[in-house]
Length: 313
Image 1 (cartoon, rainbow, N blue to C red):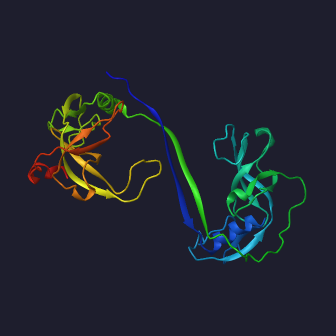
Image 2: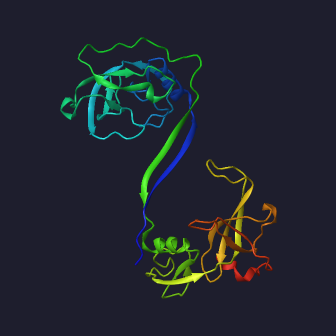
Image 3: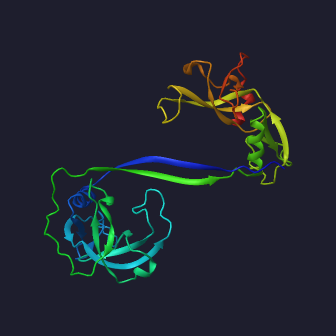
């Protein structure tokens, strides 16, 4: 049995969103060292503010300032901060109900250890030196033994309001393809494409998943397919991806390799993008040292008849 592979993977992208009037005022207020909530029709003040009452679903927009001091309602200790978190040293994640608010705000609490934090402790906002209109304008919370802070009476109206934010989402994880795909990847590095045949329906699946998606039984019999195949469907890519050294436009296609009962996808090269078509016969192009085909190119054969691949669309 081949070694089961694993590798670290990162999924990362910037998420851009516009802000409505309530969130815009809240984040602009943080930039100006003002914490704003929103008041519901029954007199509750919600921080962070929301645009709709969570109880009645009524639209709310009556902004009200609250104090920069508050009380810890619950907390959890973070003994190993990760990249991008508010503090580089161990800290507590805490829900803090600011004075004047009925709901709690989640943020970091800077204390020397878990023994230094407890539910009910008093804290205050520590502002970032540079503020841009984001939740990170609050650097963290810190213990506070003094009197409660007082709102300044701000109206919630600002010049040059923040109207949008960009949140950088990132997920770091270790991926393992499992036994079947590990064997598939290993054979690809030897310039062979290998699928697995279902013992019941006899279909050959590439890439293999270790079980037949139709019959639900395990697949273990390896079958070499291709290397040539047929384009079943395709799309033309017109937007250049970051860190991908391919000029646009280019074509990605589903390719039914000869002997396979499932189409895989690959890039089509060696032909103008507007000449790629369903039924085009293609073959893999390998580059030196590569573990998988760089792209597929036309073989020069006549196009495949539609009836030979219609079940693989």
